[in-house]
Amino acid sequence: MNLNDLRVQLEEDLAWRLDELRRLRNELLGSRRPEEWPVAALRSILVMQYAHLEGYARQAFTLYVTAINARKMQSHELKPHLFASACTAEFEALRLPSPDTESEDGKLTRRAKKQVEFVERIRTLHMSAVTIDPEAAISMEMNFGSDVLRRTLFRLGIPESEVSRSYFKSIEFVRNTRNDIAHGNRKERIPPGLFQAHQRTCEQFMQDLARLITTAVAREYFKVPVQRTG
Image (cartoon, rainbow, N blue to C red; front, side, top):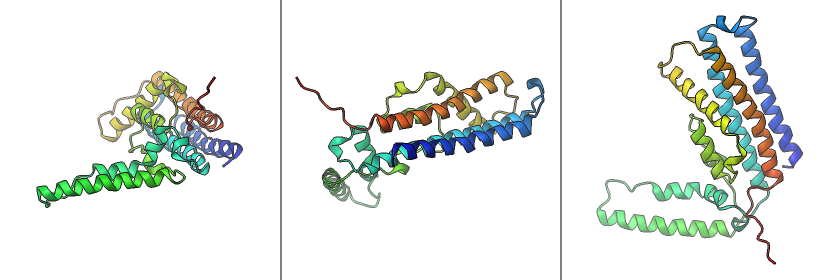
């Protein structure tokens, strides 16, 4: 995937999502003044806002992983964050407990075997091009918030400092409010000013995420920095 193709895919996915949100706001709010906005309309828009935040973040980071995989890089060329992401399945296999029906001796032997299998798998990965499974590396867990965003950035070797702190606050507001609505814990009206502020910030985050992913590929954030001597 070249840089131009990546940019086009990011922009196309972002465009239809923002267009859908705009159409929904127009249909539900129309020309009403903010103080007249229906409670149900604000709740519906915010739930859709969350869906597109999570969906776009997943798509953008998946395209980033796809671009990395296309380079067919060796483990020593990648930041350890990326190689660790490629080993997610191996980590999970090592972590899973032994069946309760096994004797204590059986559990100990099984644990030792799993450790050897883990080492063998890591050696194999070191000898071939690394492939990262996007589903494993970019797990939103249906709960995309500031914590999941930070973890995803870390796993993919993208500095958290590249994302404005104001975005984390708005993403967390949308996530928490959406959860409260889904669980029936929030039935009161969302203040229009608060709603508009976080809506604008989240949509700006989506636009900036497209630029960040493009920059990360162009500047090869995923590679181990070249050590200069002399």
